[in-house]
Length: 171
Image 1 (tube, helix red, strand yellow):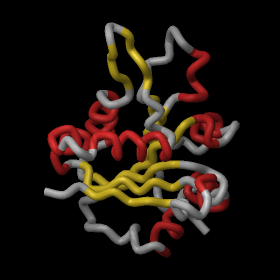
Image 2 (cartoon, helix red, strand yellow; image 1 turned 45 degrees about the horizontal axis):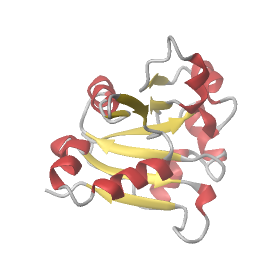
Image 3 (cartoon, rainbow, N blue to C red; image 1 turned 30 degrees about the horizontal axis):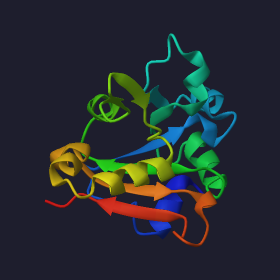
Image 4 (tube, rainbow, N blue to C red; image 1 turned 180 degrees about the vertical axis):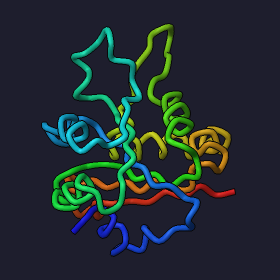
C-alpha cells in the first residue's frame, strides 16, 4: 500500500485539485532516507543550511514532494508504520513552501541561534501547541492560509495520541 493510499484510507488524500501535498521529515526517520530520496529522484531539500555543520545532516528537516504512485510513495507506504513524518496540505509551490518553513526552522534567544526539529512530527506538534495562544504567530506558521493543514504521523507515540494528529488552519 502506498503512502497516498494510507492518507486516502483516512479520508485525507481527496483534496481539491489545486492543493499540493508535501512531506516534512527528518533524515533520522530512516537511516537510508537521504540515499533513498536521491535514488528515487524525489524533489527534496533541507530546511537547514548544512555546509559548515554536516554533522547535523541526520537531524535536519527535509521538505519532500512525493509523487503518488511513484517508487518512493510505495516504499514510504510499505514503511508507514515505522517512519515519523508530517504531511502538509498547501496551495504553495515547493520553493515558496520551503522558503516559508525555513523561517520557522530556527530561532534566536539572547543572541544565540537554535535549530528547531520541525522535521520531527512530535517536535512540530509541540511547537504548534506552544504558539496556539498567539493567533498571529499561528497564522504566520500557516502562511496566512497558504498552508491548510498539518497531519502529524508518528508511529512511536503510542496509544495516548493515537499515532497521528491533524491541525487545520482556521480563518
